Length: 136
Image (cartoon, rainbow, N blue to C red; front, side, top):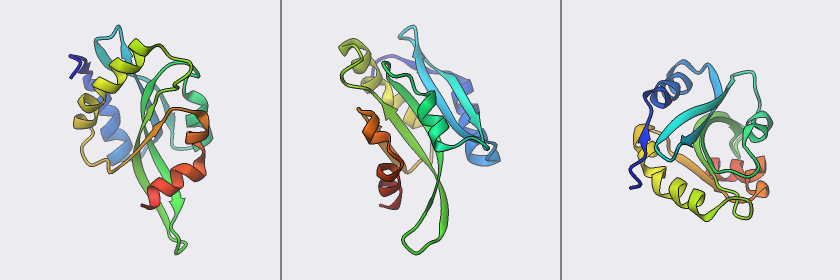
């Protein structure tokens, strides 16, 4: 544990995306190396591409995304997925370490999220890659 806390607003947004289904995604950041806060959100009309565009190119982030996909049988599904974005070649070691060591703090607050994607490169955010994780 890093000693980083999770702001109550993060849990509120989690409940909004999970229960009310009014959001497509929520992006979280660590503020002042002390607290995980909500940085951005996208309403349900937004797309997966909008979510990817909301991630900063050179800083780590956590996110929760309501991913819509089709199963191999053609059934439409929606599942919440936790994303840990940490671009290897553009972030400082210190930033990567604090995000990596604080991930459990936020994941413990997001009860019931079954899927997780860790992306260290933009190619790992490709929707086909994510869809493969969702189908597992």
